[in-house]
Length: 226
Image (cartoon, rainbow, N blue to C red):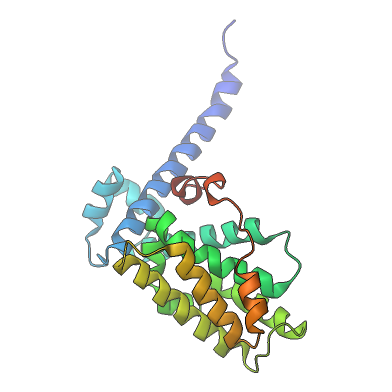
């Protein structure tokens, strides 16, 4: 039986839309590689070649390289934020939610290298971003203060301190590939919890609690392509 011409016409825009989405995703992933490598001055032609798309396709999606890089950074932030939301959604204690996000992010520096290179190369900007880890961490700090779990006078300053500790951890793990990332992440998280006023024994106990199995959360490429 021949296909209905009307069905064929309706399928064409769907195929075109999927093709556009694949092209945009390829450009963003290529841009993330360049950002992570610090190649912010790379020409558009080099980026399109890495993405295996034409120059014309680039300008169908972005007006400039700067716009592409901004989208690539926001994509990495959104991916990271969505992952943390998935992992911590069942936790009720904001202090534990903060600790869990911190411990997991420390582990993800090694497990999701492309995403992590993007985050590390933009560490200062990320602390003031309204996307990704920063707004979630600030939310958890404020909630933990209100619940009497943290003793912090200035949540924004506390976020800056925690963010500096996290970026320092990420760089250390990059510089010392043989260092145990899980142990390092837990130790830094424990120190941050104590800095926020938590009792040392409780901070240690929270940082010894089991974490979700990251291997069952999908590959980095799965998350970056969502």
